[in-house]
Length: 161
Ligand code: FES
Image (cartoon, rainbow, N blue to C red; front, side, top):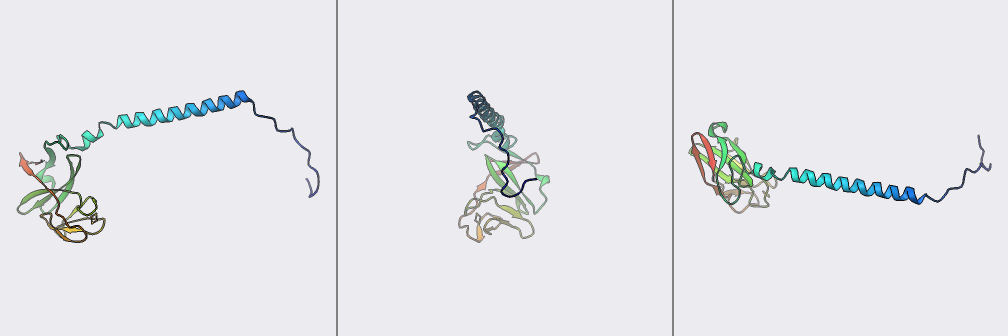
C-alpha cells in the first residue's frame, strides 16, 4: 500500500505508436464507414417501391387515376377514415346524404385532419381548427375549406379520384 509522498515505481516509458498499426486502424475505420454508407444506401433502395404502395391499391399517383379506398361498409354510418390517395392523406366520411372525401390536409399549416364522429365535424389536432362535414372551416386558425375529392361507389367499393 502506498502512502502520500511515496514515490511509486515507474512502468515502462510510453512508446511512439507503431505506424503500421496506425495505418491498419485507419483502414479499418474507413472500411467500417464504407460498409455503413453501403448499408444505408441499400436500405434506401429497398424502400424505393414504397411510395407506389402508399399511393393506394390501384392509385396512379398525383397525375391522376383512382384509388380503391375499401368497401363502403367498412366505414360505419356517421364514421370516417383517413386513407392514402394520390400520395397524400384523404378523409372519407360516411354522411346520411352519402359518402364524401376531402384532402385531409389542414388549410392552416398542413396537419392531417380527422373525423370526429361524436361531434359530426372534421378536426385538426394541431391548433384546433374545426371544419363542418362539407369541409368548410367553422372555427380555429384555418381559413380555407378542405379540398373535396371526387368519390364514387362502384360495386360497394369506394373509389377516389
Ligand atoms: S395545422 Fe390545422 S389548425 Fe393549425
